[in-house]
Image 1 (cartoon, helix red, strand yellow):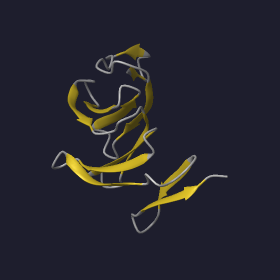
Image 2: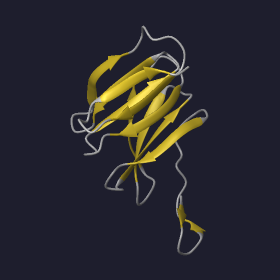
Image 3: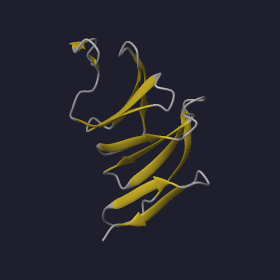
Image 4: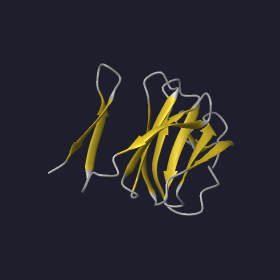
Length: 121
């Protein structure tokens, strides 16, 4: 991590054992989430880069993560062809789906705070 004002490195996020594909800040900026080819999602303290905890559950490499607008839910996607929703307050899986979808996916939260999934052509 880098301090933009001083242009100096402040910390290094160490913990994944394979490539990291996605890193995103929570809406309040206090935590970061990362998805990796090591099949894990890790949550980090934004200010220090210290590992908070590791989420497991995907059976293939992770491709992306995104926070809900309130920061309480994390969505993750993986090459296991699933999207999973994680309750960060309780550290557990809320829902999973999309095993039946074929090909690539595009996702985005809509104004009703639902996760929409559509095939990309």
